[in-house]
Amino acid sequence: MMNQWIICLILKILFELCAGTSISVVPGSKLELPCFAFPTDFSEEHITWKFNDEDIISSDSVEITGTHLSIYPVSNAHEGKYVCSARDPFLDTERRRSYSVSVTNLVRYTVVVREGASARLPCNYQSDHQIRGNAEWFKLTLMKNKKLLTHRNGTVSKDGRAVLLFDMDQDQTMSLNEVTMTDEGKYNCISTDGSTLSTVELVVMSAPTLPPHSCDGFTDPWEECEGDNENSRVTGPVLRESVTEFSFKLYSIFGESQQHKNLLYSPLSITGALTHLLLGSRNITRAALEGALFLPPRFHCVHSEMKRLREKLSGSLQMASQIFYNTESNLTTSFVKQSGEYYDSEPVKLKEDSLENVHMINSWVANKTKNKITELVKDVSQQTKLMLLNAVSFNGLWTIKFDEKPSKGYFTKLDGDMIKVPTLRNDDFQGSMVFVPELKAQVMRFELTGNNSLYILLPQSHKASDLQQVESRLTDSAVHQMINQIREAAPQRIQVTLPQIKLNTEQDMNVMIKKLGLFSLYESPNLCGLYAEEPLVLEEAKHKAFLSLTEQGVEAAAVTAMGFSRSHLSFSALRPFLLLLWSDSAQVPLFIGRVLEP
Image (cartoon, rainbow, N blue to C red; front, side, top):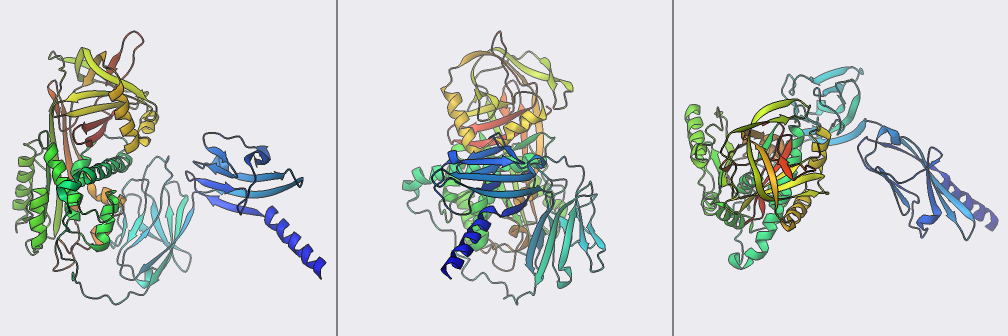
């Protein structure tokens, strides 16, 4: 009996060691393959990995660390059989573990939602996919027929319930609104070339009986920042770090949705608008906004620090952030009071007439931006309950001037075409520029009045791949390293050529808010600190920025680029580049953008 037990145990161990594992992964993802299913003291020198019977050597996408094999990003070339062999030098035995890896675009999901709610069915193109049209969503019927929900030329189904969240985007997620029990079943997301990107099993649960709307316990004012003045040395850096991290998260969102366009936005203005909304948010909506803004949970001092930050920047940056609301709504007394205290803003009621509302809002914006932005909205729906607006203007003069004599140069676009543009020149500019390895870019700093700096990030060529490489590395930590590196560099005599620029851009904040995961603002947010009488949802959010670069300086923002010459140092912003307008006093970004065509 004992001998039988030993034999069974040995067979079980051999099965665990030799059995293979089948894995299906998506292109662009990260794959971790452990050599053992349990902790072990095997050293790396006794472990070998093979791919399709050939030894694996670490490369840019494949890395062997200890007992693990890492693959990132996964591509079709990584499909095949992987075998890990571990030799025990003391027992003179060998253990093996194998994996069969298949690479497929098809991803399967199960989404569970309650009746009456909105279901988001995920679907994504690969990160390197060139968008030529929206995917199409189908529901599979019992007869195995397909019922078309969304067409590639549109984003909304005929009944208006099925909506693509993002038009012409890598993310082709569909929102199915007001779900019923008959919506339960399987859905397929089909790409423009006919391949299935994802299949989603939708499970619908019976809707619970919801209690009537109530703001009991959620109408208290925002908590005071205890020891306000004493804590500012601690709370100030917390806000600055959050603003900076949020700023470059926004770049990844805006940059992806506008890949072939000029880009300009003020992260500080958007932060101010969302923290203004945070002032009236409670419970899970408050937590969601704090997470999206990279704020610590229950950071009571966010509004007092935003006020300090705005006051510190007021000499050169004019921020306009305001809330307009429906005449039938009554905002809470505490929200109105604290809006004035922290944001120097009194919420304004909309009028009965749409044209009057358009004039009122645009006049307010023009006044706040010194007429640099005169039209932010073209119409205001009578159904609008809440409107969140943003506008920013900046004015700074060069501390080192450019020649007043007009000049022109040729700007090389991403496709190699050259266009003639007006330029600014200074053949004897005293400035600092460095190559930043972390960003794969040449960077130059231009000092502006008001204790501000304009940083120009120039990719290694005019090609889109080099620009995208810089953009993918643009993080808050990389930018801080860049600023420290260039400030340590000694000023040099540089021949400078900049294109004259005048941009007027508008970013879709609705897409941004959804990409930050703040869907609840459009569905059922807890805004009891703002309005307690009935459920309130966000309908529209806008952000508009203005940029002008002239011989005198920068209005609102500026962009430039850099390059080296063998015979002497030169700087020529005559190909696509990124820009960063930075406040040296507040240590936060004021504007971020890119110029693909002046």
